[in-house]
Image 1: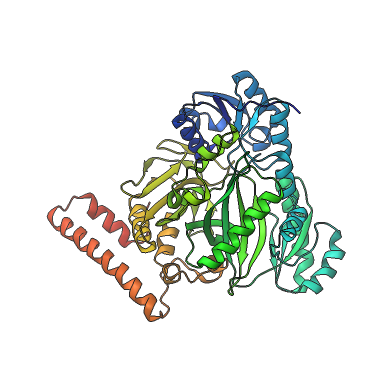
Image 2 (image 1 turned 120 degrees about the horizontal axis):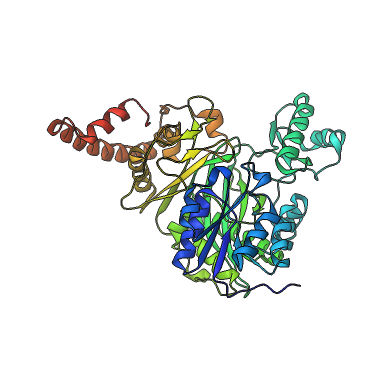
Length: 506
């Protein structure tokens, strides 16, 4: 096996956008040099500006640039890098990419190829989870033909989910509630999976009604230490794409947390896992949890975990890849306070969330105590249709969930992105929803029960008292704003207040 360096000083970031900027910043704080790569349309991207060096790798389509292993390794060789960080998406969960890096004598900042391969195979991952006593969702093995899947569906029962064996992120997934709808769903899922992953293999999985999507963050080093960093609540989704995440979860009590984290660590140890990874689970109303999948990479939502635990996950990824011990032991990990993340996408929430492209003409990010913005854009940057619509992640922290929620409201009001449509109005309305404030939601909430208007359902007395406190605090703030408006008719607060009265930001 090719020897790879551990005492490296120069890293290639094989990604783009906010995650590339995030990794570059971590490298800079560690005193490491960075190399960025870019496609034709990313020549002026923020990650290109931040890196010490940048190399062009091809045309805009990912298949001609960010997904080209040969091009990335060629840049690595020319730039003299000793390690590659894949970020998330693109090649981050491709075992062949990790192996190609190792074969080229370059450290891959992520898990070993065999672990990626094991957990990327949905059937094998389920068997691994079952072997350590972790419950799995009833379903079928991948493949077998439509006829076999249709017969299996009769035993599994409806509703069920058609899923792609080779990927995730909502692609190749179709919910089916009636037997007569299954053949069409199989065909659509197969075609989507083939286009997205180059593999049309699909399988069936029972839908757990009223489920929460809870995930456990783990870290493991080459010295045998495996720790967890608590859970994240990721139930607020649209078409299986996460929109808002938080840590900890209101739904998870100490007993459930203990059971889930013990199972997650057992799965990681079973595959000799190294580096950062996430065990994703569905949890039913009775707090029974089921293994869903393992993401063998850094997660989009990792900042909420970083804030409540104080662990810099990206730095630990690099530290682990350098053969060093993690910065913390399990005894060091305590979850303090509350963090909420809103994904800021270039989408129009008033028009079926259609993607929005164009130049950002004005860009102003919120700041202040407890506010973090991970982004890869700026005023003048052109958003193209070639890549994911994610522009930024807005993360807010507070000592309590209400405090974090109020801070997020304030931050969303400050956020200004002009020149294209964003989903900021959606987040503002979601945070005003009674069900969100009370934590009474599941994975179907956004698509089935949420409209972009405030919920007016009756509340239980305890929840009403909590919300009354939040509303009173907000009213006090708005009264101060009104006083400022009366003193200065040309103030920015007046402009902001009028915009808020229309229910959206530009």
